[in-house]
Image: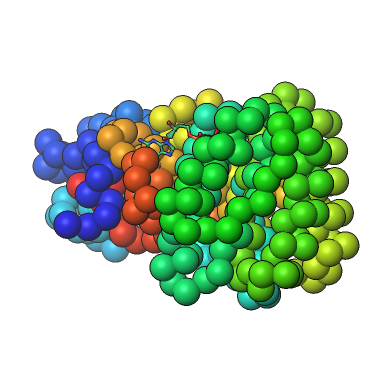
Length: 289
Ligand SMILES: Nc1nc2c(ncn2[C@@H]2O[C@H](COP(=O)(O)OP(=O)(O)O)[C@@H](O)[C@H]2O)c(=O)[nH]1
Ligand SMILES: [Mg+2]
């Protein structure tokens, strides 16, 4: 069983038997039902129409393969691997409350540890004590180091501590959790800038990523949020969570296409193993059935 089998496809091609005008209309409708934005669905269908004509495709099955390759290409907007080229490398997780930042850090920490990396977690969500507690549970479960401070302390101070701990303990990767409470852009920018300055000072030239975590079930709303965060934060990759059990995988394509930022990981459940590095071709194959 492939990992993306947990993604419910909506049988986009079922019932489509002839490559006529109805075919394109129905296809577009089904892509939108799978939570692709109208723009992205139109673009995919128009590209397919063109290629079917150019390549003189007659067979629906071949049309399906063609659409998969179009979707794969739309998803290919940058490097899907995370940059771990320096010791330590620093990954910052941002996104609104409840999207799955802390859970993703727990899962990714375990994933990296399994691959021989020394992982340090930084509990930069100091807004609620429960957030650091939740991260500590993940750290304990997977045997990862963690740096935390009291509720209400400055997230940049937590990051400063984490940088020192990373040096002392020889960490390969530092995963930094943040709060999702940053209700306006100025706030967000100030807080992220402050964290950035600390990292720059402590590890000049260190490999760094800012990963925007998004909840797939929020669909097009999530896309608007992502745009707002993206304008402030210099995002280098997307983590899309909660793709398990939704029939809304199409949103992945809209996100990559409209933000031109690569999806790097997807979450398909709440367990330790429910995180997967993203691969556009496998995803397109699972989505277009
Ligand atoms: N089904 C499912 N639930 C998830 C996934 N990722 C996170 N969650 C759940 O979403 C809720 C919020 O996650 P949390 O990590 O606390 O979000 P945060 O506020 O962004 O840190 C928790 O109940 C998680 O267990 C996922 O990939 N699939
Ligand atoms: Mg959290």
